[in-house]
Length: 374
Ligand SMILES: *Cc1c(COP(=O)(O)O)cnc(C)c1O
Image (cartoon, rainbow, N blue to C red; front, side):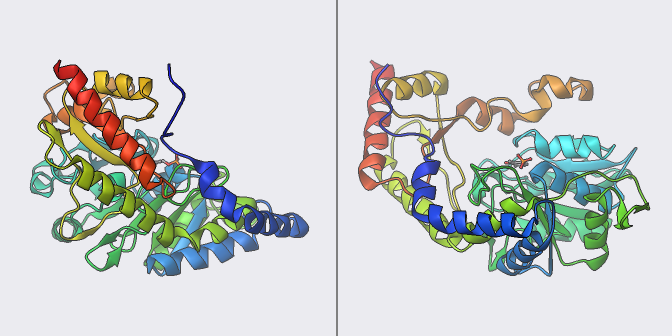
């Protein structure tokens, strides 16, 4: 095993330049004892709503709670169905299950890896309450037709924007288009906390009130509980960290776009390899740079041996996970998602990757392709 030449993600490189600024911000939280919810959370909520060009933001504990509380605030529960994609992180489906509803899958578009809008209507039943498109890898789903279908069938739309902080659909920011936008600030996301955090954006005052209630044990007034909620508050230290990091988010996203452009240039035209595409309506923020290649597992292993850490997002689509065996799906039900799961390879991606590192990734990738041919 050679040593790592290019890591998959280098959070230290990302944090070193802002470490002092973040430490000062964290100290302010300690001085004020504003640890669970509180004024630093309110401040971040205002800043993040503004950033997303949404009216409101509700800070929560993580990006799974944000999906769950969105559904609960919309009244989604037992016997209801929510449409989403199987090519996503499990949390998307988990939130639907924990709301008491059933995830109903629609396959993805093979170019964008987001929900195939031509297949949504066939999945709608009298029990359907919401559509949950996922802005996978940082590129938005095709929101105009989704909102049109939702209007026609009176459904809610929750954008799973966990991978899309600062991503755009046409001129609009991810999270500002649906009835709610759900964000994760897990440390590895484009905007990452120094711990766990999440947020919901919405333009609807009634939904915001519901989300605030569910994150706080179902109470509007302390110790008076209208519904059974949960402890899903954002913590003050994370809010303070995120307020600092938000100032640098667009710059970091631009850095990822620079990396993607260089990969696209260096890897163009390789037979049997398909590179990610930024479609016309999108401003892609490359949370993940996933290309598709045959013999992916072998290439992943060879890249590791050559000192380049790659990943797979995701090796098993949700409908084939053991956790969802009860839904009764089988291989063949969502062929595009399955083919992607078998061929996706995520290359190292973070804003601080140097041109020399990107060149190393490309050179080693080409060498792996040559190696499996011989
Ligand atoms: C990360 C992620 C989540 C869950 O966020 P957590 O903060 O880890 O709970 C949900 N959906 C998608 C698509 C994600 O990538």
